[in-house]
Length: 472
Image 1 (cartoon, rainbow, N blue to C red):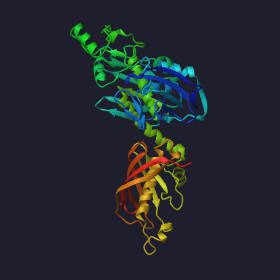
Image 2: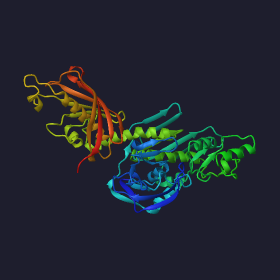
Image 3: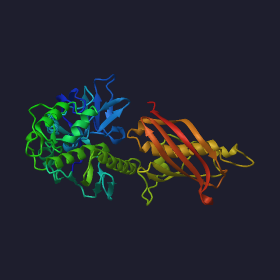
């Protein structure tokens, strides 16, 4: 697989209308520097806001994938992302003068063609991968969906099975085994599809305003008792009068580009949604009956795994069975220094549960014991809370891509309680958990235990935090 990051050599554009919004849209791909990632830029809005294409910015999956930041939205990004990932591009700016990319013919073919026209160039920085080392399994009982990631040495493969119990589709499967050789020709041309029964609901929900018979494959799953009934239905959903049911089970007898085109399009969608991890995968993906909702939930699992693995690379964690951050690594994460660095070690970081466990050894040599109190040394409660916050801050910094540019400040503390005195010789163990994190605001809850006496609770509380830019 590729070793170096890649971007495009120059700018390239294409135009059309958005599938759901129906808005006219001009889209331009532009080169980006190393470690920039994929970002959508709304040049029609004030200050041209950029929206990172990652799972943290997904706001809607009702029909396609929508990303947003501070009120700026881009709808239906999955086909564009699939084209970018299929062309193995790491860093790129996607400029738009509307809130949805042009749908083109319902596939990713035109996006790939445009990217190839721009040219692809190698950059100096090494490519960062999510390497699947253990099985990751997502299961949705209600939707009967299973998606699994399996280890696969230095390669990427993806296999999808669909079964809509429709005669025109039947059970289908498709697999991509070589991204460079197969994606552009075998998967990028696969068009989006829907069922005729869905069309009416989509229109009622103010969607598919840009949908046309030539940018989607419509599967007939609705019976009409007469031609008159069908004509009335066409009028209701604003279909051209010339459109016919056809004999193939596909509206207007639209010929398929591949016998299993719907299954191939599901592969395309899944590749696009997996781009929201923020890194390409080394591993094998198996999916049964996936959709955008399940794709996004599975991607969330892989994104957390990716961020957890980045901790090892970014801060050079010590080799240990429980993943320990030593004091040198902590100092790479936090700006605090003596006498205000109040944690000694991180015992565990669990990005999947947004949880961290840290430790502080409380010794008689702590400077605050000189005045609090000379006759009976007790660790100030406010410093216990500060140590808890520093522990949570390590977790919070790991959750952000550009943590080196950010700082965190308290905005409030609630339900703070001190249960036991902390004195020299105690060993404090902090358990902190992120409860909500969105657009620069975070809430945490945590506890501090006196581990040397069987884990007695010393303090607990809930904290609100704001993330701001670090001064240069």
